[in-house]
Image 1 (spheres, rainbow, N blue to C red):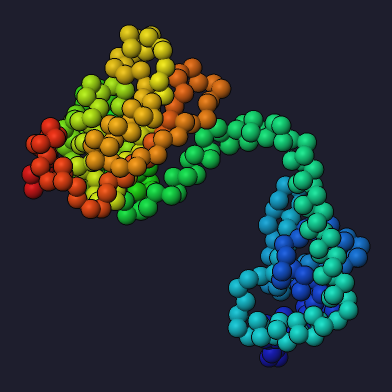
Image 2: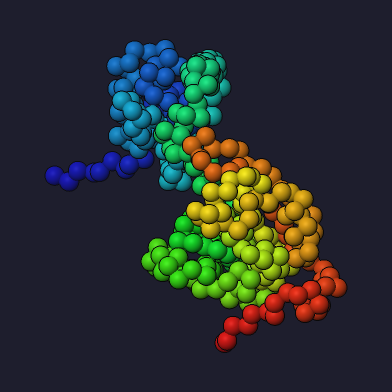
Length: 337
């Protein structure tokens, strides 16, 4: 005996034939809720809610995801065109009912209760929030997230790259990274660290004579390196040379301090840079209007307070740029083809 198979659309219609399930679906179209929250909105026993959810789930109207010991339910987003048309017909009837209006008001109460729970937590944890977040996600979570500001088309120079830690962080976000250092040991360590990145070039070279083409970088970074440079004005002039017009130089270094041990034990040449001192150096190198900002102190750090400075290469050529020899700047570095 030949049995006629019921088209799937009729099973979907059967699931919506119950007004409670239609109301439930209307709520879940707009919000993702737990069984207990759905129970509060529809004012039904938990067992009844679970039974209706099973029917809607079996017929593909709702999906769920785990959250802790419970699950959150929502309406399926991707419905076939015929099924979506069916839902629009049913929805038009359900949304006009007084029961649906009451459901909507109770949903707002459920959401307000969620917000109250969050506010209660923050009220009690505000004094410890930084510590709690640091323990959960690490003390650098905010800073690392800001790497998303790096444009995927940028060519970034990590000038004085050391072992390549900064290049390693930036490489997944930037188009290309050029990492430069004049220490053979540091270059060796950086090459090992950055070997898996095909968009990073590690080059040996001095900051006062960079192995980088004229006007080829979108951003130049000098992180905790300028205090090692005997002639910082030459290093800054080189950074200016390799930046595109409008390109940015970002410096992180120490503010002025009296730590003699850093000079003797770590080879520092400069005991930090004041805003006035750095502004003069940057101005002489061709960077007008630099911004200088002290960084928040890290309670776990044992070194001097740091600052960050941001400068931009001007778009218009300046007279001193036309004759590099007149300023004492080194001749531009040319890479062979």
